[in-house]
Amino acid sequence: MLVNCDNMVLMRNLLSHKDMAGGIDLIYIDPPFFSGSDYGSGIRLNSGKGRMSHAVRQTVYHDTWENGMEEYLAMLTVRFLMMKELLSERGSLFVHLDWHVMHYVKIILDEIFGEKNFINEIIWHYKSGGVSKRYYSRKHDTLLFYAKSAKYQFHPQTEKSYNRGFKPYRFKGVKEYRDELGWYTMVNMKDVWTIDMVGRTSAERTGYATQKPEALVSRIIAGCTNEGDLVADFFGGSGTLAAAAERMGRNWISCDKGRSASGKAAKRLAGMGASYCFYEPEVASTEENVEIDVGVASTEHEITGGMNVKIMIKDYVYKNYNDLPMDDKYKEMIKEASKHEPLQLLDYWSVDFDYDGLVFRPDEFLCRESGKLAMETSKEGFDYKCIAVRAVDLFGSSSFKVIRRTGEEWK
Image (cartoon, rainbow, N blue to C red; front, side):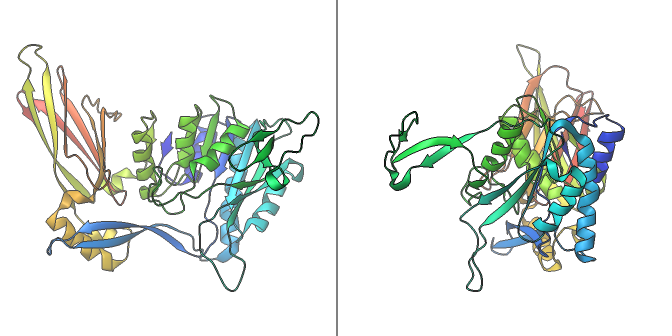
């Protein structure tokens, strides 16, 4: 389940309407860090003036708090209370933070979950990031690991522990191994994890600000769940937990209120071939601002009698550029670029060739890769009467179009 809404709305719905209290086996969250910054992502567009390329920056989410620390901690506290209700008796919570507020949040979690249910403070160490001449370079985040109860499940994982000097110990009863670095033994995993950040050339990179590596989340999933368990991330971002869970055979829920985040997550999961439900309570407001022009052509197969239907994206138009999530200086760039080549704003689109009027179930999903996006697709079948097309742009806005066949015409 991928959901685009405030996580409080979803958690309240799960608890009251879906009878999900005690139904989730692992919750991992990567909330704002109280950094005092706004985070965005860059988009490169061609303008109409000599096909110049312009970099446009959109705001993805805000990590600024008008009422300071009190507002931030209150936001987290009420959500922690609901997460505890959602967790099963064998469930665990991982809260991903850094140096800004980790110490304050731990006190709140001790109160809600109980000090005895605090299991680990895990240090995620990485190489990326800036350096300073005024303090030691900050090269780690902290993950606070809490259990719902003493019944929590945990599967020890192992890692290499290199011998001193990389030489063999030859201790009796100790099995040793050797690789290109030297001799080592296998020990239970420690609470300091060295995992690379998502690099600029990484295949899993979505372009989303503050994206976390799948290797990090996969380690958590492997340690605290079994295949078929339900895991959740209520600050889902670009869907890292969902992607890792999908690969590992877990059921998952991912929620984020940002349109851009949910759009990137949907594209990422579709690219994996994942099957999931996508809920967008606020999609109607974005559809009012954009309009997609779709062409349909159909021909009858001479032998089978089936119908070959071709769908073509002809145009994508913004009605109001003022609603875009970015500074005014970029809005004029986008307006000019869209006059020249409006389809360059599209990120992905999908088609349901047999739309029932209630649930959109796409048969085809076309994504922009390396700057290129196919603008037509086709399918052969029988008695197509209603087709739906959904298009999502680089800013997370979407447009939905339904085309019906009346006789020989599509309207």
